[in-house]
Length: 212
Length: 247
Image (cartoon, rainbow over all chains, first blue to last red; front, side, top):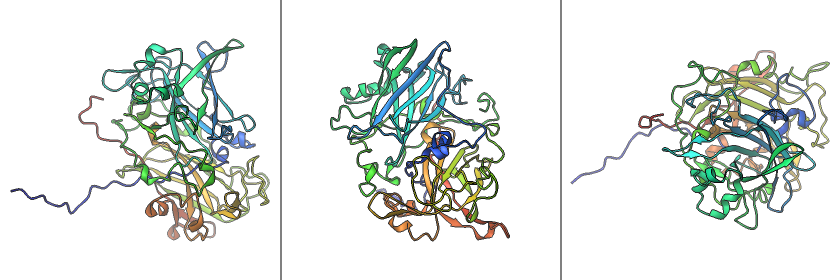
């Protein structure tokens, strides 16, 4: 007969600090020019690649609440690989010089946000899989208690999307399309449109958010 | 940005972050915080196995910051000093296992002593201070320590219920070295009587987690004839060991 020995000690694991909303004035800290003033010599913005540069694309969209109203006090950040699928981080086997990180606030009148960047390459996934080109986004705003993570995929990458472990791991096939940005061409620019629904009466149309 | 190929930068292992304990955070739908009602997803979050996308993240270097970026008393001063209680705030940023998070970007923003934000959308009657901007930023040092100087923010009323008031607070944005570690939160002040009735803070379902957001008066570190001092430590998600994964 075996008896279990109750543990008298515990492994130390500190609880993560609780999240709080960024609030309506998140711009003061993270995009002060949008709050209406200049303070820092160096600021970070929404442009990683200037329009007109070879390979440039724009990503744009509006975030809607459950009533279909644009979320105008939104702050959104982007993290992506370079055109060859490498990140500017030492965990990448071939770290990139392309920063791949940007942030912006939505327009206070229209709710439109926009990034100017490059289309990322495919990135290795779990095991031997490859992830389709994608951009990670995180959303902060008044009324959002814990930053919402999602991913933007490209609708002109059907073959790669069909093999992507994250997209294919979404049990509800109808929800996968909420992560696909639609390619447009406007005034010589390639623009991918990506509207986000924080909440929607139709569960198939609410954007997929990720627990990463 | 720092040279990410430099072997001296960061730790050698970049495993995935430990699963987030969502019960430690306020739920997306917190009806007493009314704005959350239409801004909270109805579907469950989709849990994914972390990939390189989530294990990596933006890194920052000191040359991207200015010498006064962490001095909110001076970084917007025009013709004099801002009005209000001078305070120093400091603390350590560590991960769930107690390891210092080095080189983390800490960004802070706040109202001035009157409870008024320098923001084109803030209409509160409290006066703007011409010498106070209300934002600052810094990187943690090799011990995970950060420090800045500011004016203690005032409380202010807000439209939630008809007469709700926010306790004095400073907003924090934190970026460690991985995308999944990203955190935005708020710091409150020990002894503030508005804390108990704040729908945003009290939406956190765990009392110890609420207390974790309240800075303690650090009497030993008051600056003589100058400033009071508060201590606020922060815990970010930690990375798992990766002994059995090639990289």
